[in-house]
Amino acid sequence: MLKKTKDTLELIMNDEFFIKNDFKFVGGTALSHIINHRLSEDLDFASLELPRKEIEDMMNKYNAVKLEHDPTIEDYVTNDGEDINDSYMKFMLNGVKVEFFTPPFNLSEISIWEKDKYSYYENSTLKIASLDTIIYMKTMAFWNRKKYRDLFDIHFILSNKHINANDFINNYLENNITYSIDNLYKKIQATTQFYKRPNDEGINTLVKNPKSYEWYRAEIEKYIYEVLLEKLYSYD
Image (cartoon, rainbow, N blue to C red; front, side, top):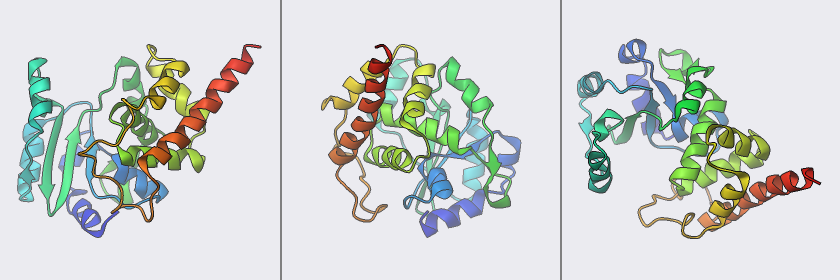
């Protein structure tokens, strides 16, 4: 992770907040800490519930600045009868974005979180989710938000065998029963689904000589196609 990110993490990692509340260190920075595959810049902490006042009190203690949400997203959530701050809060602390959120788990996926075999970050009081759980959450992000860095992370995870293609697909399908391998294959092929958004930060500051967004998409498509072929041949 970037030096300023590591310094910020070390500033807050032993705060009593992380002892009193069941938050875990997750996201791309937690992933890069475990597998050392790229630089990372943000800090992500997840829990099944978001104690808003306690989060604000803790971050105020370090003079963090609370960041406003994208108005489009906030309006969408508000129109759905919810307050986005009940599920997602973000701050800027010493030039580092620090996010607290509740994962968008369905009822089946909650068990993944509850059974997570977490450890502690560098002997601190801060829990860090297991690699399996972080990979599953990254898989969710890959299919839902489709950011450049998510594609890079998933390609690295697959190509370096941190998870095989069958498990990558089947773990997701087991917890999202409305999908099938055919749906996912069609989805990753769709240019209306997988394309680099104008507001995507990219990965040029995090990875040396990265490939294009489309290159990573096409490579991941190959992995999914192999799983699809295996399934088709198994019916013969």
